[in-house]
Amino acid sequence: MREKDPTVSDQRVGRLDKINAGTIVRLICKISGIRSNKIGANDLDRKFSYFEVEESAARHVWHSVNKATLDGRTVQVRQVTCKKKRYKKQQRLS
Image 1 (cartoon, one colour):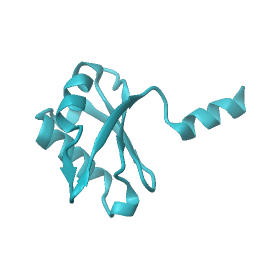
Image 2 (tube, rainbow, N blue to C red):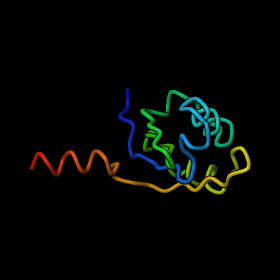
Image 3 (spheres, rainbow, N blue to C red):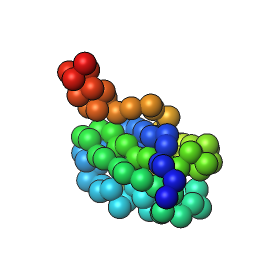
Image 4 (cartoon, rainbow, N blue to C red):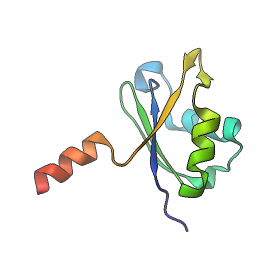
């Protein structure tokens, strides 16, 4: 199986919006047309959600999903290299 990389951040949509990880996966698949097996781990924070996409699909997902709407909210997508929480954990270990 290919590594899911890079991580893409789905901004402004999180647990406060009463959505779950399946909602994010369905949104990505429906709008971009990719299959769910190209989507890796996803994690929902209060105001943000993070998901991993195979590198070969990342650009297409970004162009397709960016500025889409989910339950009346505009979705903004950006590429990130690591989540803030993981980054903090890595910093403590160093």
